[in-house]
Length: 104
Image (cartoon, rainbow, N blue to C red; front, top):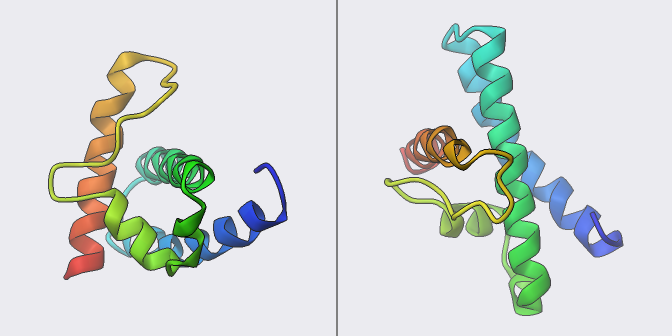
């Protein structure tokens, strides 16, 4: 988070992502798996906020559109600063699951 507009859009993105986490809980995934997906969603939110800071016109889009436009059936955006290059694979897995959930 950099400033108040980032906080507002971040909150809107969380509102979009919360039903997905609830879906995972109801599917019976382990706490560890849910935490891994939540961590990946946190990274996705950060990537979306970064993109918005490069293109201010994106602030006008609804949060759901921002999320849908950032992911697809193949995964998510490239992580800019992964702790480990292998972090992209589980991140893409989460993004694929999220895309399927949001477009179902």
